[in-house]
Image (cartoon, rainbow, N blue to C red; front, side, top):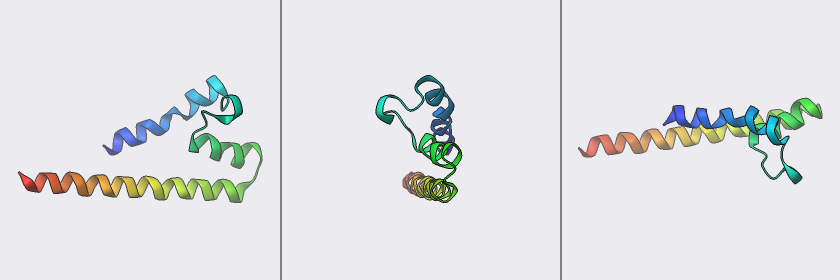
Length: 76
């Protein structure tokens, strides 16, 4: 499950190259949003905050997933 979450974050380059964020940034991912602020606009503080938020969110989802999987293993 963790590998599928990591794999879903790899769509950054595909979406960014194809749409550049899309019309009105409608298809923008958190990774493209972070890239835009961190590198394109050189707003390093806000970009680092977005990256930290992504790290916390991914960690929480991974911990919840691990606890659910471990709970289901104990039922058998």
